[in-house]
Length: 69
Image (tube, rainbow, N blue to C red; front, top):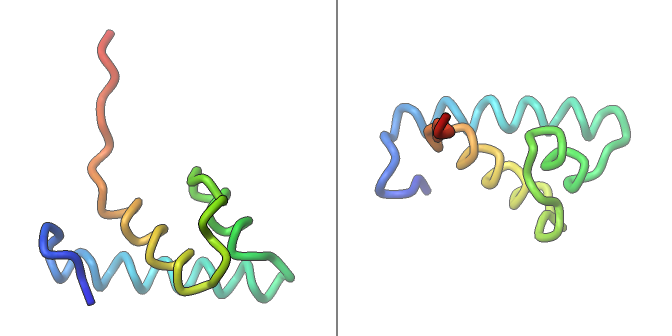
């Protein structure tokens, strides 16, 4: 189920990329927390692969904020 504030096509693409990235980390013996850390996310709530995939997809859909000079 995609969040209402994200374009559905963008969400599906982000979910596919997040699943692929998590599958590679899993295959190499990694944990969901390591997958989250690979994308710069905090790993405290990533106890399950489905949560890690959702959090990574949300991070991919979030626009990058520019820092003030």
